[in-house]
Amino acid sequence: MRARYSAHAVGDHAYLLTSWHPDTRPNEVAGGTKTWLGLEVGTVERGGALDATGTVAFAARFRQGGRTRVFREVSRFVRVNGRWVYFDGTFDL
Image (cartoon, rainbow, N blue to C red; front, side, top):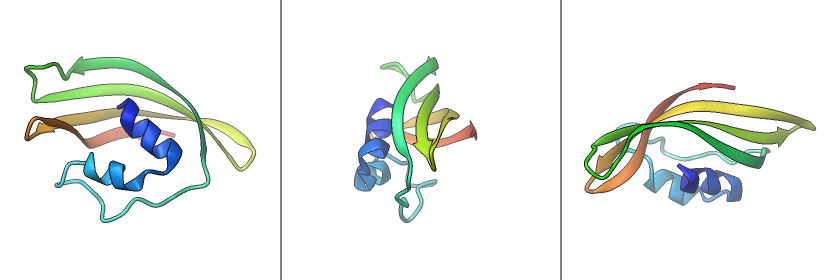
């Protein structure tokens, strides 16, 4: 989760794509005009060493167009070939 936030913050679209589940991954990740300001990880469910799935609730602050806003999501991750990848999420901007 933190690695994907960092990838968004620095514009590492290649990492975002490789850390996305192949069934839900877009063809490309568009750059944006957001400046990411911080990440707060909330509830984490499952996602341990013996789990195949997990969820992470988070809030990420960003600045865009002179306004500071918060992006909130509950992300679902799944393990593929031993590696955690982002599957999808429900969000509220």
